[in-house]
Amino acid sequence: MKEGIHPEYREVVFQDMSNDFKFVTRSTIHTRETINFEGKDYPLIKIEVSAESHPFYTGKHKIVDTAGRVEKFRQKYGNRGSKTQTAG
Image (cartoon, rainbow, N blue to C red; front, side, top):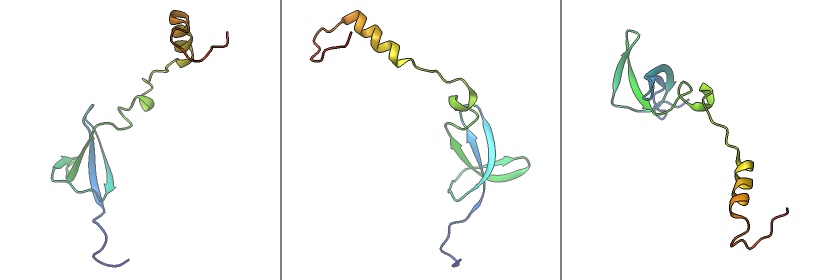
């Protein structure tokens, strides 16, 4: 590797702002904020969503029933203003 052309690769703390979850990983991202985490000072990166708060990973996501919504709409409004015919 050439000297002086690569960014500094160091340990940083990522903090999920929605639930205050913090984890340490390595990154080249630059920041002005620092935090004392587990007795050591690290650069701090604030994020909105992590695996601890994302609905997919926490199991709190909603499943949307789109097929039933279309049929319900057609029952309610029929073919008014429609240029296409529905099979039915």
